[in-house]
Length: 352
Image (cartoon, rainbow, N blue to C red; front, side, top):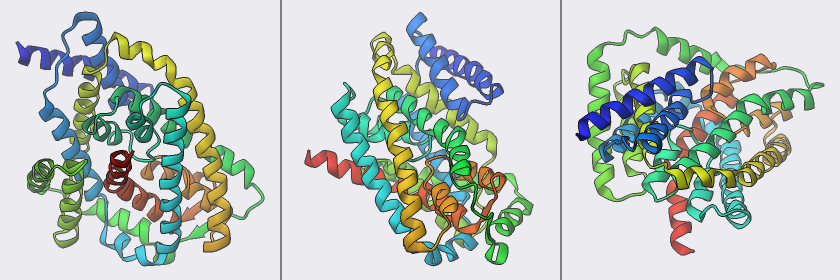
């Protein structure tokens, strides 16, 4: 009976996810997966995804982030260490501040509030939040708001605000563009993906058993980064990532009932706090990075935009910024926020 429920849940999640992808919704497969699975559960009480689905999603998320890291990018980290430390320190402060404000201004519990404000990946953070006892559907909804404003609003706002600035082009040795093209030109064989997945799975399970918050994702992430550095051929096909997003969305959607659906109406205030908070953060970091790190205001504000790393790399060139530093900062943010922020938030929650 459970296998039938699982297949029905994945089918409903896939149909809804495919529809959202066709509409070009950011994180469409994850968002659609939540909607399809939740609809099946609320209407027919027939949704089901085992706990192993959550582990699988975290393993694949860690493997994908890790396999995207390149040796050339790691070599450039010392050069951007100062802006990275400033940016990530202020991100952490903003995360905590907005989390406390969301909790104080709405019925959202403190764990959910903290994870709703984490500037990480929409596919990764909700599943980590579920692992730590947060309301995953609420986290996913607010992460979606963060991603939409990061992609749809901030770049245009930054471009208008900094329209008098000259285009930024920092292509020292064309590090990022060359590494990206080189990486894409390598022959990728099925056994490369199999080895990557096996290493990530073994280390992810060890991370799960360790009891470390988000240990599954952290261990799989670190192991694949190491594999990429020493072997150089770590990768996963894009279809596996989509499937992991589907499973992750379906797992989150299964936990969404009528009560949770009604509670989504309380998210208007948290969403406004996130929009205003990250807008203020973007302008503040633009000034700080300009003054203390010699970055242009436009480049600095784009570095402080809480959208996806790959999204910002593509969007920035459209508004006249072609900067290696910007891409490296975004990649570093994704890794640190995913691997470290949950540990810090866990310690803070433990002391409250």
